[in-house]
Image 1 (tube, rainbow, N blue to C red):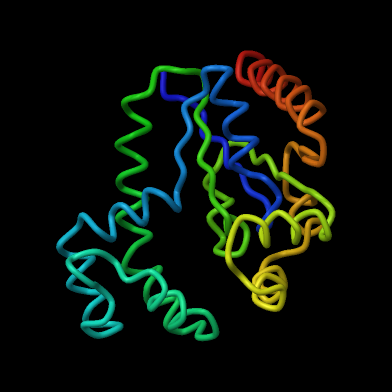
Image 2 (image 1 turned 180 degrees about the horizontal axis):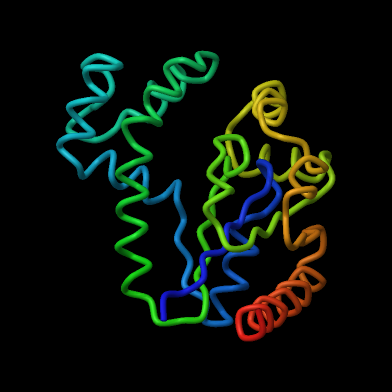
Length: 199
């Protein structure tokens, strides 16, 4: 039986990875799209060649992706970002499909930041959105990254609002308190299993 595919998303600083780790402790396989995309950008010769053509030689330093440079190029250039996604996303999708085939659980989770924004939400069986108040998210990101408040707010403004995401989600997890979040994850896990066994 092919596992059901659950999309896990949420705005920057909502705590998607924390939630993903709670699911992991319940034995659910987790695929982190961003991590895999970065790994493929360093591993795939085809992606490397295309990204150098797109961004120039500066895209890689010592054969490794020059993340700060690439991030600065795509930050305010939607066209470049779309071109980069067109190079990377199909490879990630293929890698993900192969990964799913190797899993033997009732469902797997794919964590992706811009699942609604790029329209990929349609390909999931169910969607979980992680939410948290904007102030909490801002604090988390500033503590985690050496980013400026303006930069984080600009990213937030580029992402869909929580309300837009909630409308299209099957499950919502409010991640402000770790203990409560862990309990929420347990409940959602049971609901998903129930839906899979009694569709």
